Length: 155
Image 1 (tube, rainbow, N blue to C red):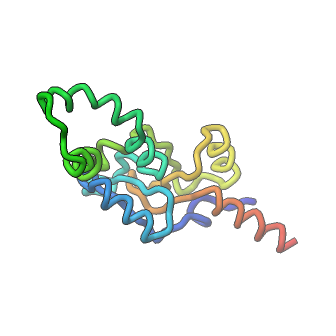
Image 2 (cartoon, rainbow, N blue to C red):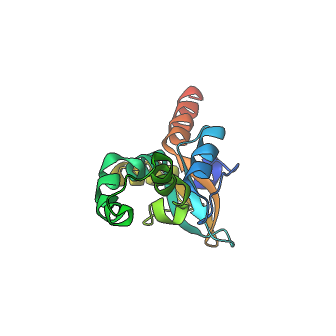
């Protein structure tokens, strides 16, 4: 496998922006049948990554419990409307708030074998591929498996 990230990366990118809210992020991931997407600035530089796991973690019961004390103060003994609570939990949360910031990236020249090692060592499923500091593709575990299968078929 002498191929590089540039040879196997997915180049039809779905990108998120820091101000995208959680419903928009969820809809984008669902519409494109993907489980994560990079969050980029206006120049295409990676700021973070939002995955299904990030969305689920932020919307889980533990997060709501941590926030309960200030909601009780806000309500001053009154019950808060369920619609209001749902609004606070989702509509106002942005990609900048829910994204994973410590994103592992690779240059487009990195050999596929090294990317496979990196994914395994870090326990991650995909990496953005950069050229001159900007996202130009994504390499996922599925891309690596397809490459391996193709190389075995060609023997």
